[in-house]
Length: 74
Image 1: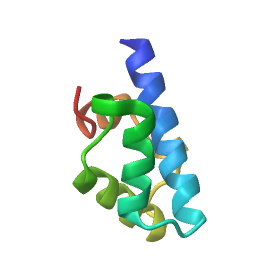
Image 2: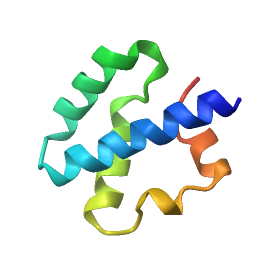
Image 3: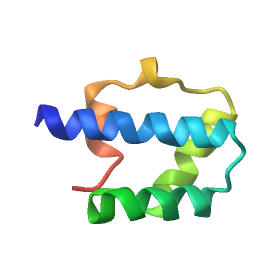
Image 4: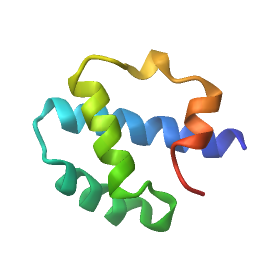
């Protein structure tokens, strides 16, 4: 379980980084899917997190265990 959460946390960090680089959502999703395959979130989840990062709602420190478990598919 810990490894699963660690991977998801790292994926969010990459989404946050690429968002600050102004990479489009679909490109973020395509790149992450190429690396993580089926273990990565769907495009709607990426879109939601990009919006949150852009709005300044969240940074990596704001992710609780519950949030990390529910926002990404297994």
